[in-house]
Amino acid sequence: METSFVSGRCQLEPWNASGLSTRPVKTLVQEGRSDRDFTPLFVHDVFAKPTSDFPDDAAATRRTEQGCLGMIDDLWYKNGVFYCLSVATYMDANGDGVGDFKGLLRRLDYLQGLGITTIWLMPFQPSPGRDDGYDITDYYGVDPRYGTLGDFVEFTHGCKQRGLRVIIDLVVNHTSDAHPWFQQARSSKDSPYRDWYVWSDKKPANSGKGMVFPGVQKTTWSRDKQAGAWYFHRFYDFQPDLNTSNPRVQAEILKIMGFWIQLGVSGFRMDAVPFVISEKGAQVRKPAE
Image (cartoon, rainbow, N blue to C red; front, top):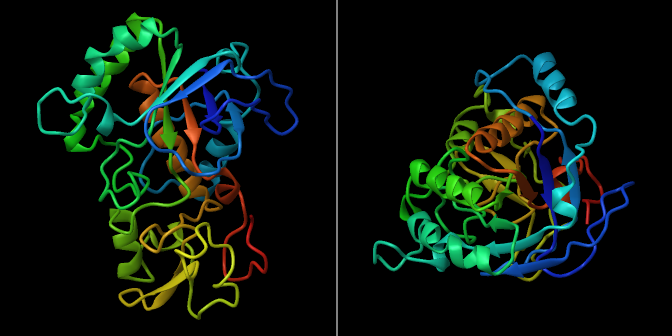
């Protein structure tokens, strides 16, 4: 199976991946807010099969290495016309004041008429909503306010019928602190999810550096009383960073991607790329910018 892993800013500009020559995306239309600074990235030929919750490290490493080899021949995203929207604010089908996938489905003919080729969805997974959905509590679900997984599949099927592709935000630098993974990680040092996050027994010397939102954030490390340790968060303190160097976390990311690909997604706009690929931990003297 071939797909693409897309990251870009919500504005008109050439998208360049390191070492790759790309042509400008023709048009990118935004509906809703996207005020983050994203670094472009393309990862090709990604496929993920469901695995057990905790594969052995060697197997997880193999899946990670084998999942990102080569380049696809169909470079549809280079000349695509992307329309970015928030499901919550687009079209309300049931009259509850919140947009949903059934409402979005009704507007596909209109969107097709605009001449777009791809719909880019901002986060729609379950979330406490403290950061516009970028604080996710379940990577395999749809926020009940927006509908069900069945509604999502009906939407992607409707897009396919009209020749439209769908890409979604992939927010894997961090989770919500309400995510079951973090809840289990903080419960015990022996938790199998403990090393899915970044911890320190003492307050790190770099705790006052690397804030994404200076003036709003005061630190990138916060102490969790239940865990009895400090945890790392490049964004807000309710968004603990995943330990993306952990092979099990990497394998889970591929599993998440594979899940949505099977439901009709053609690619992903990856959130916070520089932080996902950077080294994390108390030993880092100068956090990635």
